[in-house]
Image (cartoon, rainbow, N blue to C red; front, side, top):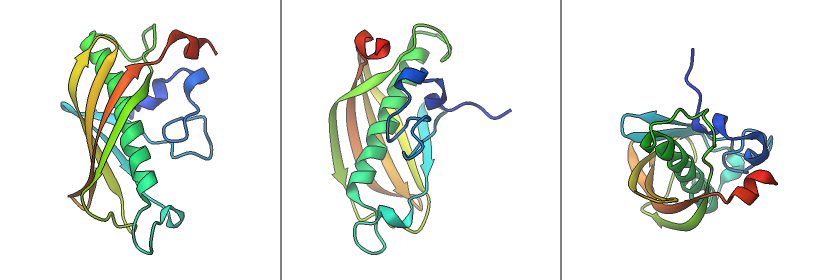
Length: 156
């Protein structure tokens, strides 16, 4: 049996994000998993994700960093509390801060791997550093400050 991605545990009322929502049929629907102490997402850009011929649009890359990191934050909080990801109350995080450094152009013609690691957990805040790799070469690095989603969002 294949393990479930972090995003597969998001409650239905908050699973519509363009980047990571499994219920958004037009979105990226990224899937993130633990790989030891790091997290990993694999994503293949499509031809329409182009910036200039042959290279990925920077906004897509930022959204991959963003959603990979907020998914990592949720999984990290469950792990930190020693809870299963299907336990209640659910953890869902939103972005308080997103910083992205474009290290080199990201080629459009192959799969991307996004790897994240938790830098800090403090109260309702998780800081995650994520890096996008193309053929093993880091092309984008970002840091996200993720905060636990307000209860009012979960009730909407």
